Amino acid sequence: MSKNNKANTNMGKTKRSTDDLIDSAIAQQNDWMENRRNFARRFLKTLNIFARPNPKNDTQSVATSEIVQPQRRSGLASYWFPILCAVIVVLIAVWVAFFHRPNPTVVVVPPVAEPTIQVADATVEYTVPMFDIVRIEPAGTVVVAGRWMPNKSVSIVINGDIVATARTDKNGEFVYSPTTPFDAGNYTISLIGVEGDVESDENVFVYISPRGYTNSVSLLMTNDGSTLLQAPTMLVDGDLVVSKIDYLDTGRIVVTGDSLPRLRVSLSLDDKYLGFARVSDHKHFGLGADVGQLEPGREYDLTVRLHDGDGRAIAEVKHHFTMPQMTGDDDTYYTVRRGDCLWIIARNFLRRGVLFSIIAERNNIANPDLIFPQQQLQIPTSASAK
Image (cartoon, rainbow, N blue to C red; front, side):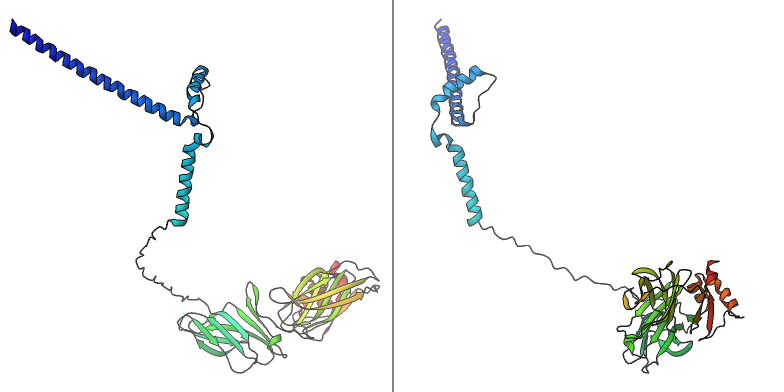
């Protein structure tokens, strides 16, 4: 019996001890939760300046304000936390701007080999000889430079005669530069490739002026037209001369004159452009244009301009006249000059070159292709209206 009581006593003590432990643990947990609530409450009171009332629960807002209101501080003490943050940010910015010196980063660039430039072979084989430069020198000599196939022979032909043969280099280039000056006059230069007897597609017209190289002209002639290689750098009196002005009763003006060969002359009446014509190899030009009926007694300005290869006017002749009364004569007369043909004469006076047969018939010319300088031709101007 006593053993049983003793056993029961021990069991009771064990049970009470476990309960004490549980109670102690619960008490500790309650203390921890209370401390946590107190810490959270203090933290929220500290950040109370950022708290906003809840419009949905006015009662709770009022209660909260009543609880928090006594804890509010007046003045700058209520804003110590944002002020502290701002001061810290300013101090950091000042330190970075004035005191912080970052260690420079050294970047080691490995050496790069110099690029190797491969020059492509500039040698281009041309199927026919071509001109690059034809220049008239101050001494009156002519320099001809061009290109063809490499290491080939090229003959220089002047006025139909072979005057020299040059050898191209490995790039196909050649230069011909005679030491003897050229006499004043017109020259036509072409090229012939000796191997295969290949002729150039282009020719160069050269005019050597008796006044020197400053008045000389060099033009590249191709199937598409002409390109001025060397223009006159200085003109003198006589480089542009108007020899005759005809006004026909058909309302057409025909102007004839002399200028530098192969250049262009234009015609204007009272600054109204009427047309242009090319000067012949013999330095003559003729230009016709329709101007309508001019009023007798009225003053007019007729201007003839000489143009270079770029179209710029390098010389001009102005003719101021008062239109006279027409005599009613249907015919006019024209003096043939070197380089003229009936086709051009008919085009200038009769508007159409195909009417050359009318001029030939009026002047009893059996062969229209055969006319002579200084030959006087009667032009039936009324035929142009038929």
